[in-house]
Amino acid sequence: APVRWSYTAQAAIRGAKAARSADPADAQVIRDLWHMRGVVSRWDHRGPVGCLVLALRDLRITWESFDFWDCDGEELAWRTLPWPQLEHALWRQWRYGQWQVAAGGVAGFGALAGRSVDRVATTALWSSLVRPRPGYPAGPPD
Image (tube, rainbow, N blue to C red; front, top):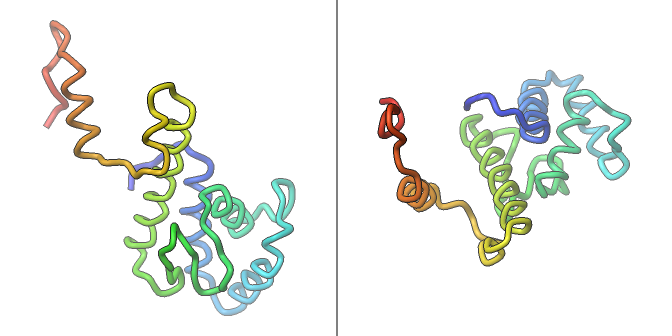
């Protein structure tokens, strides 16, 4: 995935990678931190897994069972799911959250709250609204 400048997204991706690649001793430390997940604050437990706990909370992903994350009703077996699928699910949840912020804060977008991003429709709408300027290429480079 391309680099994104979102603290929450980066914390989720990097923390998930760190948690998945942990050796057995570190896995026990992660499990211990997981048991404390309700008290992790912005000012303590600032390692990758502490940041992951906070990022999951920001993304509205629950972590009630150690081996699974609940992402919008979908259980993610974060320890065994192939990395590309897990990473995709994290990015999808981040994009959904961004969409909800926009839908709630922009006049005229309120009807979109609770819905997911339709990339094809959004791109088509954007393309229909944007006209090429003289001296610039008509579309994105191939």
